[in-house]
Length: 82
Image (cartoon, rainbow, N blue to C red):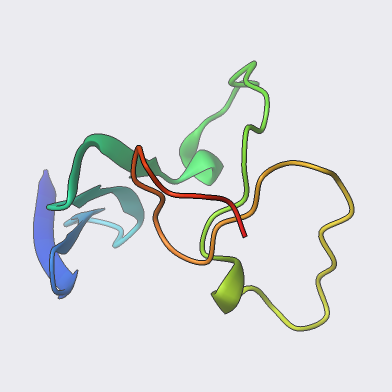
């Protein structure tokens, strides 16, 4: 059974009531976007990375070394990459 809670204003995380694993995150300001914990998959999702989001919160020791668009926050349809 999944349970949702508002982890920050407008951001809702769901987790398993049995084991506590976070499964998905949904956002009030981007209803068509879901965050999905890829660690819950047991097969390759066969997707390509399109962009980096929330880069302002990345670990200081992690360097982004590709040329993909970077966003400090959740991008909207009109957002410009950093």
